[in-house]
Length: 154
Length: 154
Image (cartoon, rainbow over all chains, first blue to last red; front, side, top):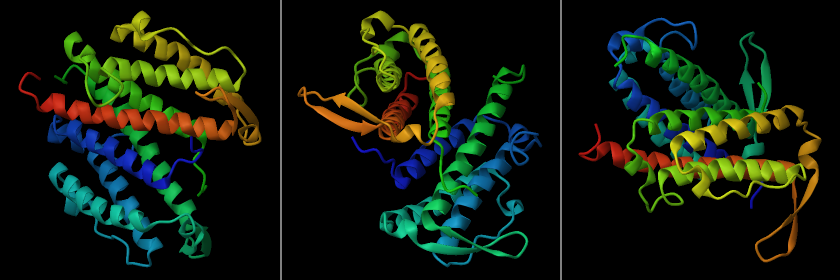
């Protein structure tokens, strides 16, 4: 028994769950998918885009690459968000395959909202990214339950 | 940003995902649910029972309580496994609410299959339980995809 859950394991778990939600979304009308909602960061689609965007941007940041800055408006269909997720998944998986325990301790200076710089380790950032997706998936689960209970859902 | 994912967060994430699978299982025939399969520990229902059983047994073990030893045969319907999961969930949640960072370092002597005793910390055991469910959910996701692609699935 190993008492450690590898960062990679949790990323892959999140991706599996995310793909299940993409499948579920295929059964929704565009209206349900794009409807502004109070749980999440707007609509279901926008929440999924946000998860994909934030994961990739942090992984770019760790590697000193320029972050993803395209707006949601360029990806405002389920097909496009799924395509983006697959493209980024490929790159993030490649990065994770190079990740070692030692690398998780590397310091990454990070600019905060107020312009100040704060140091985080690679491990801290990756665990933040995992928890970020878990948080938003929780919101989508809540929305999913409400939709499936609604009289319009078949 | 906190660089730590709380053990409790991952337990609750697993429970949310587990409940989604229970919902999905409600759409399956008893035959699909109980069919012996090569991924997982037998059938889908048996895999879900195994997840519920193992989680609760370890949490009992940590607390020095007697473990759950009833066989799958007593819980061979979706309704019963869901009921067991809810009952155990309640007890495990109560335990997790008492859990502190210091408690995660407590040593728990554990009897292994060969009769020898090995020491694990509470944290190691809890992370093993989380990874155990992640592992089996991965199998169920794989089985789910195969079933949904099968011509008999509506």
